[in-house]
Length: 256
Image (tube, rainbow, N blue to C red; front, top):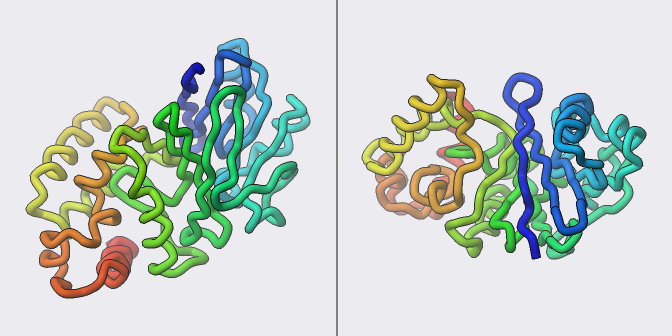
């Protein structure tokens, strides 16, 4: 069973589109295509034919290329059942614990509302790949446009059983700004300080910081660390429950 070969496609100002190729069957999926043109160009460069679109949520910078790509390749569009009315061209609607097959590779689907009401994520265990859209970022998480802090904390907690080696294929290059904020709420975290310095070095050369790994995120991402005593003390919520700590952290980020 071949692991997915995953290619990064930059788009717009800070989007990343992820092209996932299963080589045994030449099944090819694009995750959250903001626009069609860069996907068509990358497929042409690699000699690949797009067979699937995997959408995580309905925002325009994640579904903008759906219909043009479907017209060009006659590909299958898969997206969240809870949001199917806002996913252009959707063919297959999926939700919690459903599976999605790309050739010999299979993803487990998580319902992860918070950023939007119908957000989902796809976890390909064999390929150590988590396509999480705007739910989890490198050193951050998505804004709560349509959900509550409790919903988002519950959504992020669904990733807790996944291995540290899982690569986090989020949809935006927000890492440097996220690191600056993270240092304000978790200033005594040595791993975070080291990671922030490395991010600054990478971005100075215009080098991408994504994907990260879940292990890195658990050690340094404040939005996954709402149970950590050091972070709780730093924001003055030593005895608070994780939802309250997460909510305060998200509020501070919104106003950062």
